[in-house]
Image 1: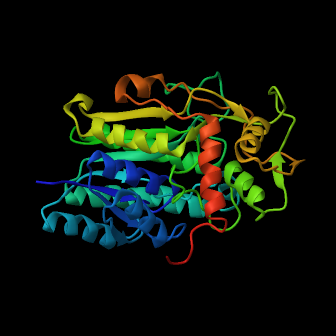
Image 2: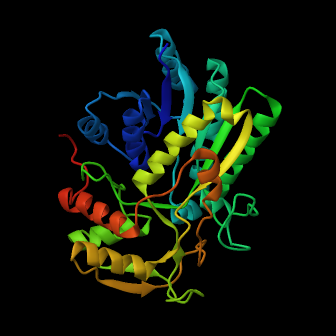
Amino acid sequence: MEHSILVAGGAGYIGTHTLVSLIQTGYRPVVFDNFSNSGIVAIERVEKITGVAVECIVGDIRDASALDSAFQQCADRGQPVSCVLHLAALKAVGESNSMPLAYYDNNVTGTLVLLEAMRRAGVGTIVFSSSATVYGEPEFLPFVETHRIAPTNPYGWTKAMVEQILRDLCASDPAIKAICLRYFNPIGAHESGLIGEDPRGEPNNLFPYITRTAVGRSACLRIFGDDYDTPDGTGVRDYVHVADLADGHVKAIDYALSSRSGQGFAAFNLGTGRGTSVKELIGAFERESGVPVPHQVTSRRAGDIGEAWADPALANQVLGWAARRSVDQMCRDGWNWQKNNPDGYPEKE
């Protein structure tokens, strides 16, 4: 009997790249998405890359009946859901400070509704898209999975709360398995240039600001603070190629569905283990694209920290995952996407 992977939020930036990896590995993903920050064209591009039709169910993770229907559809055709990949979330740190209730409602309440629907459907395995923001201000670097959990913004708290919910759920029921993937900073795009990051409205992350400035959609890139205690004063982050991140999801699902994982809760960092400053990233992008990126320094953003990078050793040891692509390749692939899609995804193909 063939099984399905229900990918909540599968039409988004990380979701579409993960769909490609899942399909190429032999999994059958079923997308469940409300398309609030994405469009159907992104799914059509995934189909073009893989040559495989992708089933899409339109729905919101806060809608219990829509979730029940999605699980039932898969079961009725003899392809029941064996694992949920939970990527559905509001994800902008800055926005979460001004809209905390929306973030707690979507990210925490939505997860509770999803977990209840999984329980009704008899699905006991979930891989959750968490974030390195759960760590907050570093007590030490690099971050390891046993670091204190102390987020500095509502977005990070929503991820930390869901992790705690999953930890408690696993403790209450030995049949439940939950893997949390703590992303660092995904950038770049699929090497084909067909799919990439296309935020609605103003970007909340650095890299799409860089590419939009390079392509002329923004006049000038803002650098939020150059007075951090870092080598060049700008923030340092662990940038990871989105295609490497996608492969990490597949490795996590492989592990969760195998006998190796046993039962219970586990969390893994997904990063390269190397930090890159804002100015270094701009320089790498300019070298790879040949396009200058005008920029100016403004004040720090609330909730931002100076430095963050991962120790990815646990993911390497347990999941067999390691980031393989360089910052230069991230810039090269990200520019390839943006220059071929200067306005992002079209309304329709």
